[in-house]
Amino acid sequence: MKGTAGDPVFVASPAPTDADIQHLVERTAQRLVRLLQRRGLLDDHQSDPLADPAGGQRTSPLCYAARGFSLHAATRVPAHDRTRLEQLCRYVLRPPLAAARLRWLDPDTLSLALKTPWADGTTHLRLSPHELLEKLAALVPRRGNT
Image (cartoon, rainbow, N blue to C red; front, side, top):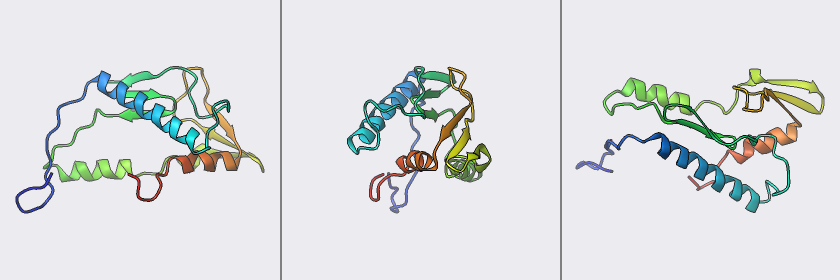
């Protein structure tokens, strides 16, 4: 939305509910998996090492995780608080994973330590460098798509 001078203005939105966040994460995960399948990046019958075999779960108020995707919507920043807005932007723009969580097991295999264990107790993933790059590339939107 633009103000009278054409500058963008913040507009307060209604606070989301846990059900809103759950719906958003599950719908987004479903659509992204379908998109990856249509593009040939994920086979219907292929085992995906990043897919959580357990169902989605509420991790804390206004936070939900499902199928390898998560959303934390509990943080709100008032429009006038530019310092907190900058901190939030820096947080959102950080890399998708910390290099310290990657370790070479042998020349063809990497171990990726998960930030939090999955419901089935999984704490690490074994991936080839190619598989890791596939997973990271899938997170990058195509040029012109936002």
